[in-house]
Image (spheres, rainbow, N blue to C red):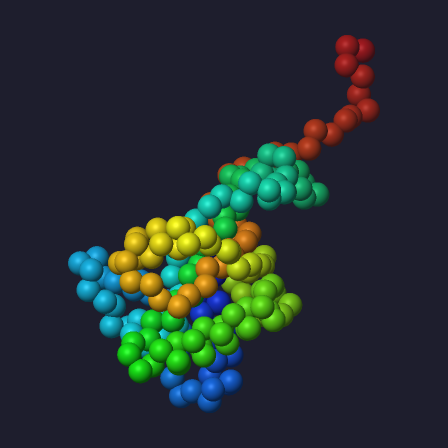
Length: 191
């Protein structure tokens, strides 16, 4: 589900940038910035890179009692979904003389996500059926938070913006059982 959400955002952003700048190849990549051994990821070079910076549980999400849904035949009982927010980084990983390009593409990405901050099935038919919608908000970071964040990612700051992607729901995708409604009868007990 997380991969579907980030993949969709990358695909939508790629389509937008390809139209705006008449690009022949994708400029957005979903990738780490570094390999586990600390070497740069080649795929992420001279790209806008989308990567997961963290997850948090959405505590304000409205959830129904019991995790089931009602039907004419009774209640379907299964595990209650967990709602998570994705902390999604959009980083312009361009080197040397390409720095102005980094700023241009990052600016365009911010403008795109500002103009389309909600992705649902009406405005984005490609949205995975398991997702109801994605809502994007820019997260403000203090200088110390930004320093800590980039220290985690190798200590080398890149022009970037952090988004909170709200309300991704993860569930077990399964119904455990059906609990029938109790129906009253006309018979009198003890007659």
